[in-house]
Image 1 (spheres, one colour):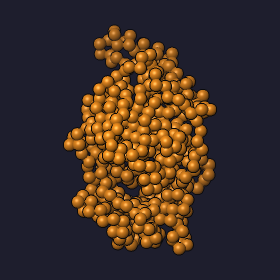
Image 2 (spheres, one colour):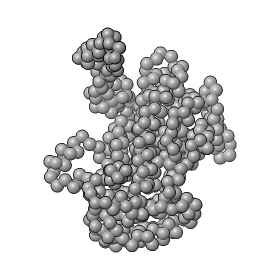
Image 3 (cartoon, helix red, strand yellow):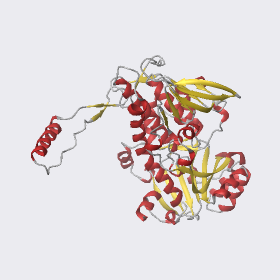
Image 4 (tube, one colour):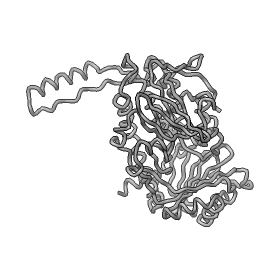
Length: 479
């Protein structure tokens, strides 16, 4: 597991990892000249004021953090107290980003303990992998790096291939990936634990706290159910990090205004130990290969889960009521359903057979319409991150990535707003949350749409087209 170190926000860049270099004299001169010209000529369009250039902070090497001997202490006089509801990956990441910036927080979770959740299924850190150091996490010892992605027909014929291992020349590989992030595969709970350990462990979370309601007066007054007893807490800022069926979201946004949207398919997931495969040798199980196989309707995706296991994800179209019914039948019924549909190339049937039933789950796939600013305009000092803000299908692997980016962005916005004032009393919605939500929505809305598109094209004939480009690229070129 990642080694715990103490980190604090870099004062040179205010924890942003980059510094403004101002506007160059040349750009400023051009702008002033253009403004003067526009005043003389009515038909001349007034130019936009040039933006200052940003450069990586040399003190923190762009992470926004520097090491410190002691755990940062909260600065109650400077920053608002943040209540974070939900100790999933996004909630813990936000707490960690707040800690580094000395922003006081309380982290609430309805589970009784960390291990109340199963190990969970695997996820892939994509663009967020390069952000880990911005949370003080230098390495993920449990993480697996994949270097090749293959697409097959059900007979096992390769119809698509991408990834750095496709480049045979070592220098070409290094040149291609010099400035690129690496995809890291890791179990959801392993990543969550890495963040929790960096935060300081279990005692940094108030477990067994189920949010019931909140009211906004001078402070936010939160009410939780703890073993049937109501407990109250106060905070200045409330963040819903409590997932796709977020209580915070439901209390802020009427469910009728933004309901769950069924995406027309069910996904079934499983984890298989490699040593259960009776010494089966297959190049697809080398621990660094991701592969998928599809027939235009059903699709199997497999990736490394840890050093000793693979995770598989099988999906296919189904009516919503049928998908709900199948998911409720339990793991054995789900396994039977997958097995009867996947008489495909090796090692798929062998892996399904070898997967223990208790390692299998399934659920209908949902998202929501894009989050719009008007839905939160009357929310006051309350906002959302991760799946609570922008749930999406699992087919682009973006859920955890977007949650981490949300967490970092929000902590930075809080810091920036309060570094520019002398008085702690500011309008959080106007000075912090509107800016955060605008950037969050612009970034995540693209991922929500592409994830919804993937739910369509991964179960269509698009996946049968040959070519060493992603299915998303094939889909884009077909519409």
